[in-house]
Length: 265
Ligand SMILES: NC(=O)c1ccc[n+]([C@@H]2O[C@H](COP(=O)([O-])OP(=O)(O)OC[C@H]3O[C@@H](n4cnc5c(N)ncnc54)[C@H](OP(=O)(O)O)[C@@H]3O)[C@@H](O)[C@H]2O)c1
Image 1 (cartoon, helix red, strand yellow):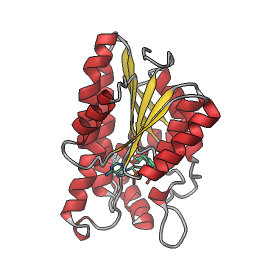
Image 2 (cartoon, rainbow, N blue to C red):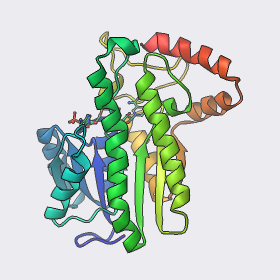
Image 3 (cartoon, protein in one colour):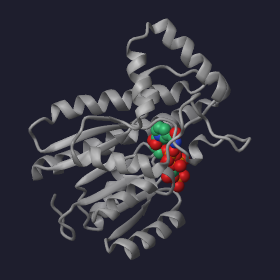
Image 4 (cartoon, rainbow, N blue to C red):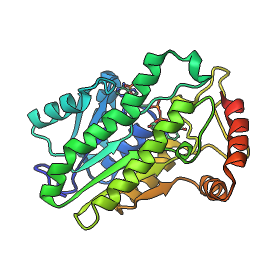
């Protein structure tokens, strides 16, 4: 990995202000990488950056950016270039989720979800790749989800967006074979973060499967990303469920996801 300031390489992590993104940024810093923290909540990013710099003696740069704008990737990378930063590792983690019947969520919110979960993820990947290819090395990790593997009622656009992330990432990983650049799709199952907190104080969940912590997901994600794995599903129970799902007829898969969707929607 090449970088002016750090030979471990600099990782840009989107959605680093909370949850899995903050944990991933921490994991990169813990392993000696400089980090670029991106999200809208500037004060949260700033406080994480100060914490990481103090604990891990790395450089942490904050770039506040709303990733739901159509020109978000361009604006973000323009700022990074102005600051003289080279992105060796891109972690597309920022994401959002709306639950409930599709038609009850206003269309602009669905559009915003698609832009953050898909549009900006694709645009950032497209814009960092030429530099990585020129240097002959680089890592991209896209945070998909176990919801990428089947339709999920009441999380319809969210699950469909993650199906895109999974398919896109695996395809890119093949296109980049032997070029020194890898793309990893990380697929966590339900993970204890603000995203899955329900109004009654409980969290969304799959019956009999324990929700993971953001730290566990981040540690496994870091290892998978640096090893250049095309796909990593977090947690043995999640891997078992996905394997089981592959051997079910589509109608049975729909029936099971209907039950899970109704429980969480
Ligand atoms: N938690 C789970 O069960 C689970 C399971 C599988 C996959 N995932 C995926 O993991 C990723 C992280 O989710 P999480 O659970 O850690 O959720 P989270 O705690 O809600 O974090 C979401 C992050 O995305 C950022 N974000 C949202 N909208 C944004 C926007 N318009 N512009 C810039 N940043 C934006 C948020 O920052 P600001 O609000 O500060 O902008 C925040 O840092 C997502 O892609 C999610 O789909 C989560």
